Image 1 (cartoon, one colour):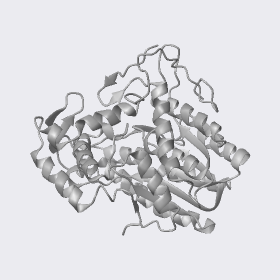
Image 2 (cartoon, one colour):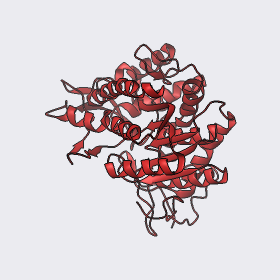
Image 3 (cartoon, rainbow, N blue to C red):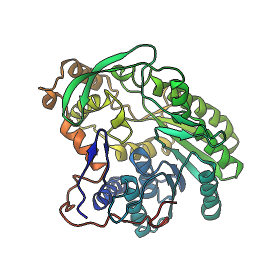
Length: 400
């Protein structure tokens, strides 16, 4: 079939297998350029490994440290007349590249919040690797079914206390408009914390500890975002911000639990980037468009792979993690430089539909979004017939 992008709101309902493979290959090339890390991880579990920061973490570990990796995700495989999700194709491409490089790679497709998937993954760790020395937690989901109670929680992106009104970018039309978001009601905060907070991260680490599946000196990292004040009402001070506060609380608890292993838990605050998760957050796409313009002009722009490569090389495995006053690793440091934020803030007050191309990089935003789904990559013939039914070698063609 001929595969073209079909965009609905902030999601693309199709993905291109060859395009996703090219995107993965480009990320691998970035990591290889830096050479092998001397003291990098060797046996890595990535929970949420198929897209965005999770995928880039898996690539950074495998091709920057020759690490064996196990990835966990929830993706839809392709069929003869329907494409898979991008994460499925990304994983198929990653496993193919890993095999050619002689690296162990095994993947699990299922609900990472469930006890069943935890049990299955831990059994694989024990059988194949014995223990892991790095656990990356990078899940992003709008809902979560609690493994004990069976209750289904749904997260919301809302301010707290009062209506939030600010500029917004319609990513379909390129129009800069104004958006108003109603504040959280009822149990919105608790629901969001249940999905995007630290409970499941802690459940994973507890299960790994109980199974003696964590190596001495193990590190675990979960990802967060803080951003500039203009986004705080919808992010840092909104419902999702409460979830991130819970994540940091869990990080401190995990530090205590890992102390007997001389282990360490981290929250890494990463840069604002176009990901499947960030595209859904109001206000953020306009901020990202302005940020891209400034950082590209400055020569400091990074995508997810450059961010994760820097996290691994310069922080986690450098002997100098450089935590901030709250104990977080900050690889959003280049984004949050005062000069960058001052210029982005100035342009925020002035930007409108007519001057968006001058002040922002909406074309770059759109390109980054399409690349997530394998579109717009050089060297891929998008007019050619392609087979959407691509297997992930360690899983097969069908979902687990």
